[in-house]
Image 1 (cartoon, rainbow, N blue to C red):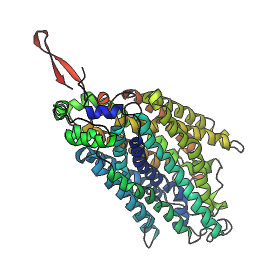
Image 2: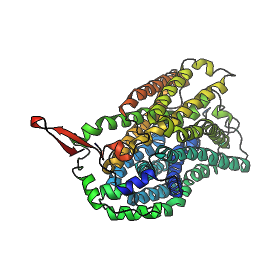
Image 3: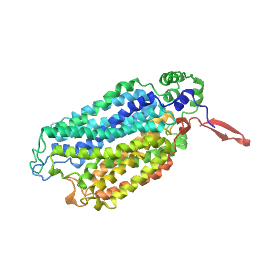
Image 4: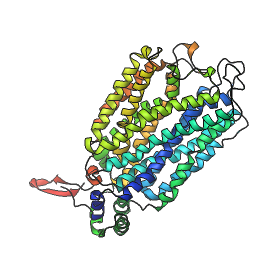
Length: 533
């Protein structure tokens, strides 16, 4: 049996799509745009960092980052993100979504600028300060995950909630795309100004001094979109669900949403007390484990397994493109040309596979449902990964590179029209209001643990089995082909864990989380009594 819904929450659930919905999508979405730009732009400039700071006189190939440095530069932001997701997720349930939201954005702005200003008298010094600032950049980005998802889910109506949360997450696709476009423009501009020879023609002159400005400008650009939305984040009222169900302030919740929805909403302090009575079980309680334990396991494991595959692909596309000869050998290019070609390749993949997948999710999630889209995505990712891995030799022979790229783009399409979107959406819907941000943060942190494994592990795993053909400083690995088999297995396991997570399509948040339910407890002599769930 269900309890009657609060009027203020019912008004949000049945509200027609209006301007404040789109305002919330843009405000939260620009945070995600910045998150994606900041996290992925580093992969566009790591080759350049190797050429600038780790040049080896007399070597046939340009300088490259040592394995430990490459792992740190690529992965340290993920360590910060994981920490930020747990910390700010918890803080969002304690202090309120809005109060914490501004902190994360300012941290992202300051650390984006500081990353570009990384200083030091030696390569180690520059890399150390870069890693330090990117850790704290990641910490701020981490807070954006649970807060943006929770705020959007608590503002949305139940009919189109999935599309609204997916639209916020879809801004990640534009962030990745913009990262590639900005890098193309900056590298092309510097290349036009400084006409440099290839490495094999003149190793020293192939990397001009001014190339050091290129990667710094690219990293610092990430501060601009975040700064543009700070004022509007501070103007947003606290969500009614936090104010009513967590802070238990019925009057403030009614006043805030009356202003937002432009309708008269009655205060219901007695009903707030009734709805929140005996609902104080904690995250580590037996009661939470009974009601939501399998849900949290399912959402966390799906995100963990997805991100192993997703981030290892995304961060190391440039290595795969080189392996299939889509990008020429580094020695045949200048430093600026290499940056240009890597960013062009990643932009093409984002344009063809990444961005469309996100918006397919926006279009269909409230029609098809979360579970079906996630299952289809994991299944198709498994199929396409195997399609890349089984005839891998075929894809690397001249004339077949375009086919490889098409298959590769399809794996991205079904990641984004699939688990990369749904793993973000579902944890913001299925947990009670006072633990929603915390549980989303835990699920997201599990994902970033997978991203760390994918980004660190793939550096080593994708190395050639033949020691003479590995990148400088790396031990032999299992090769790209076997790495693709491992990623396919992760996707298949994700498909299985999908069925631990309930479907939330078309339900109110209180129905999804069981906050409005009551249950009957059997007593002696056949009597029952009703208690809140």
